[in-house]
Length: 404
Image (cartoon, rainbow, N blue to C red; front, side):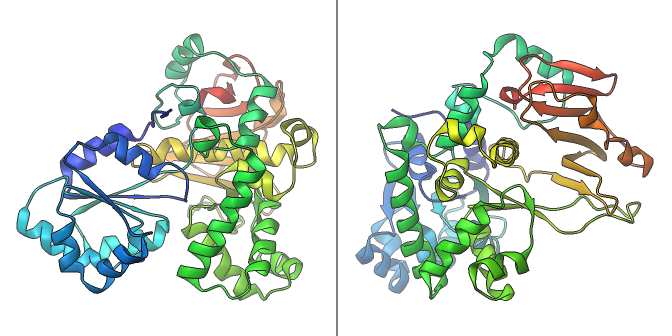
C-alpha cells in the first residue's frame, strides 16, 4: 500500500524547472518509494548502497553515467559526492529538465555539496516522515493562522480524540509502520542499528557507538527543551565540543531540528539559545522507553512530546511545499516564552501549544510582549485538543491540533 505524499506536487514543479532534483531526509521516510511511484517507465533506478555500484560511481563516474543513462533515480548519492561534478557536465551538455532524481540521507551535507556542484541546476527538497494529514488521507498547505481557511477546514475534517492523537504520536511518521504489520520496537531497534552502522560509522566516523547511542537517548529525553551542551555532555560522559559535533550529526541526518529564537533589533532581552526537537516522535518515544500510547499520554513527557509532534507537523507542512520553515520561538530574560513564532511577510504570528482541551486565556498571556516591542503581530493561536475552532478574543483562536 502506498500513502500519497503532500510533497508530490512540489516534486512535479521542480522536475519541470530543474535538470536535477535532490530529495534529502532521514532513512526510511519513503524517499525512494515515492520517487519510484512517481517515475515514468523509462526512468532507471540505481542505489549506491550496492558496494559494486558505489565503487563504479566513486572511481569511474563517467562510466557510471554511460551505464545508467538519464532519466535516472540515483539513491543515496551521499556515498559518491564526486559524481555531482559529472552530473553537472552531463546536464550542461543536454540542457533538459528532469534528467536526474537524487536522494540523500545527510540533509545539510548533501545540500552543501549539491549547492556548490550544481548551482542553478538543482532543486532541493526535504522529506520527513508521514504527516498527520497524509496519514488521514488529506492534502494540506503550509500551516499559517488564517481563520477563514481554518473555518472551512473544521467543517469538513473529522476531529481526533486524545487517544487517537497519542496513538499517532507513539507510532511516529515512518511509512512502513502504516503500510505493513510491523512491531514498532523491532522496527526502531533495527532503525537505530542501521543508522549507527551506515550513517554514523561510514560517514562521520564516530568512534564510540555506545556513547553515541547514550547521547541520542539523552537528546530524545530533552526534546522541546532549550539546548544545553554542557548538561548533555556531563550526563553522557563526553566533552561539550563532542556533544556539539554529535548534535550537528543528528541535525544533518534529519533526526533533530533546532528551533532558533526570534531575533529583532527591537528585542533587547531575549535568550539566544535554540530549542531542540526530535522530528519523529515514534523514534523519540522508543529511545525514551515509553511502552504504549497510554503510558506516554499519562507520563512525565506527555506535554513535551505533544509539543514536539505539533512543531514537527508544522515543519513538514513547509517542507512539503519546498519552503524553509519560517519558525522561531520567543523567550526573554523575564522568563516570558512563546512556543512558536511564524514569521511571514513582515508579520509575526504567535503560537502556544497545549495538550489541554481547554487551556484558558492564560495561554496567550505572553503574546502581548511582541506588540510591546514594536513588532507587527498577526492572528495568534493556541494549538490544543479543543474539538472546534474557537475565538479566544478578537486576535487569537483555539485551534484543534488535527487542523495543522
